[in-house]
Image 1 (cartoon, rainbow, N blue to C red):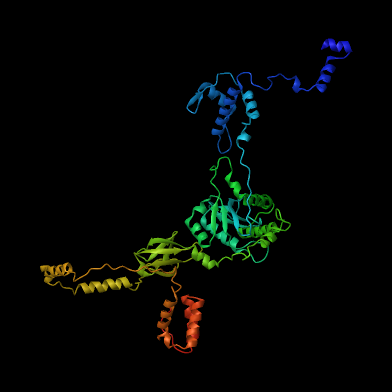
Image 2 (cartoon, rainbow, N blue to C red):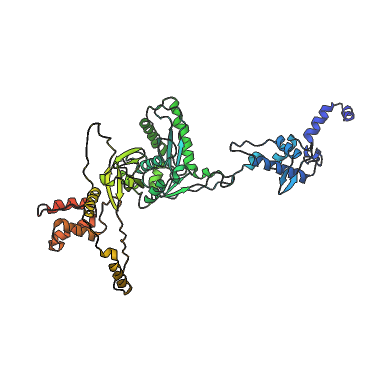
Length: 517
């Protein structure tokens, strides 16, 4: 190269620079370039696969893995078993840089080993067909109005078709069923003004939080004809992050926290009511923003894509509280009180010492009691004991009166001598053997009772009760009066409503005796 440069009167650097720009660099490489020469390719591939598997096996939830030098140390000193075959690396054969280079070249890097399957998007065809629900703690910390031991939770619903959201903040100790039912009813109830979704969804898609395992939560959704669906548990589908299946609500949740909760650094809310008021204003503006695909707002898309029969309106809050009541077996104390969640409720004196079914809803301040196929109540919290040096005797209950009667009756009983001689028993035995006496087992027929015994079971029972109240057979009524009774029974079988209408219609004509209940 120096002789060539001297012959042409150039420097060696000029010759090298011109050769670099003129000739292809790949053609100047060795034939075995980028090919391992310390061992065969198959052996290097085998060692890299084992090291990559060791890194994957030792990964924790924070994605911290074992280092390459530590893997080499283990392989060189003790080795590792692969399919019951021990593999040990010769000491000093490989080093960190060589192994990392080939791990990256052959696709064994941490990024490649954590690759997820390709996403397949799904979307509901109609509004309110599927709501995605997420329960997550708020990013806002150190809040004055949140009691110790609880935290501020954000409950958010997202309509799968339109992308509209609805939700509110609640103060709870975690993802409990009571808070989940409260926010669900609030979302289904909606608001009359503004861009807010409403109605009962067909499907509710959520994660595997503790509230979806609650029996009362599952029972209420079943009564509302809502199908509960949950995504697969974490790490149950290989490398796929299962929570991405409800990504619409996760995306809305992240957007709300970034755009809404960050403003609390400038102005902190003073109460939960004020915080929810601000949230509803943000939700209204969010729903009025453009849809992800259609040329309209999210709320307009929600209205345009409702089913032909429109949305299913939610029930009243009183009925919702009724279906949230769960029966529990409780033993009534000697003071005729029963304890519910640490609070005493005063029942009737007849229930003292009995085992009853208590109906207590999550929205109720009172309880109902089922005893011997009858429903009693409502009962309210216990007022407390009477003052000292005072005396108050409660009237005798029906059980006490019955016990007194049986006790007095027992004093008048006497045993005939034939009971000791056994003659009557022998005669009875002969009659049974000759089939003169047939012993039959009696059973009590099953009777279905209403939850609170508010309605008649059928029209026949209602007409029988109406005849008892009017103290006359229904056949003696005029055609106009029977027509009114038939129309009333077509309308409802509610005892209270029927009683009120009968009093209004018949009170000018006759005196109604008895109680409709």
